[in-house]
Length: 418
Length: 82
Image 1 (spheres, each protein chain N blue to C red):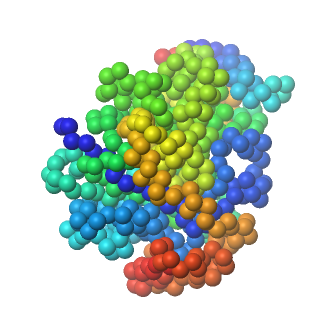
Image 2: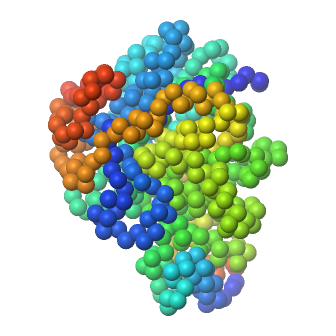
Image 3: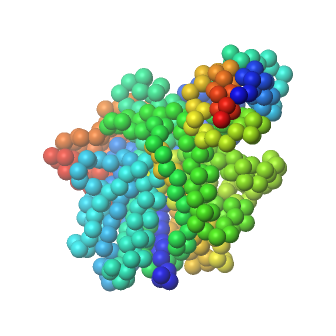
């Protein structure tokens, strides 16, 4: 098995609007004397006419647009990865097929395992490519998640308090193929750690429940467990020296810092100064986009990957170690290589510039979105979206390159390009 | 099985080590770390450091549930029983 495989192209989409997280914490009266420890500054907030479909399509569009007709016809599988599904039966990938104008001979499905979903999707796509059952075939994997929970009443907002500052929205699209221009996977180099635990969940439409302490404990157990399994499979693997950079699932940067510190203590009995220096060098670049969009769940570890590539801009091949965790719980540590070609191709997506273009919500506007009746709830049968809900947020540039939800007729979502 | 009172003292020492702001604060077994202003990441670090001191190697999730320092010490004590 010598065929190269990995990510041919990738893009991050952080939506149309964001909120300053410190403003939110001040407004909620959260006593956070060490706010900086969170390592988060902004979070993307999905507007009523944005949903997991629009995030996914807007992330994937620049990738698909960049393909020749022949390359586009080689996309044979579309996997959407999400914990923000909009229907129990119909997958978001069906909408992607339509709005990205993909071939009809396509395998479409959606998968779920909390924030681990994106990695599950990537590994399924990689295994499809490496199996060689359809030589030259490509798979489009899109992790897309929004957080739109604290609806209804003040009680719901209170219950959400533990994760409201970090809950974001975003999507990462990845074209997986045997021409891995951006990220070449280290084949066979992975490790898993899973067990049953009720740390955080989405038990009903538009709700989330969780226990911050238990979730952190499960994340820490998984981080050392998954790396342990990786080291068992990969001869000579060393957490400190094998990887030039690291990208972890990022609920918020502080959690990544905690996990890194634990591993460095456990594996090397490292001292605080050495741990801090290593974090600064090998993990801070991965927070570049996460600290601007918040926790993007299934997309989060790939938001970290994109952040690292854009921040480091490697001009020669470097090895990256990735840690993905999804509540419930399942996790994976895996690795791959990025070089100058990946730097160039990802840079062309202009992720940072597009994040800069988002509309900054005031607290009043954010609260209106949270408690307003404008929100499209799970299971909505008919509805017409109000474009003027947040004056200023609606893009009037008229480039026709951003998909938004226009209306729902008999559960069928209809989108338009603006 | 190690003595829970001794473990309580280890936990309190680790709290002061992890959160320097609490160095001079009176801390007792009935205090909850969260109420003392120890954030979730710091709480996990206190627990990890205490486990190291006790030479305890068990999954972190097994230490979820205690509502204060004394309860955490009691739980840790049962875990050291092997």
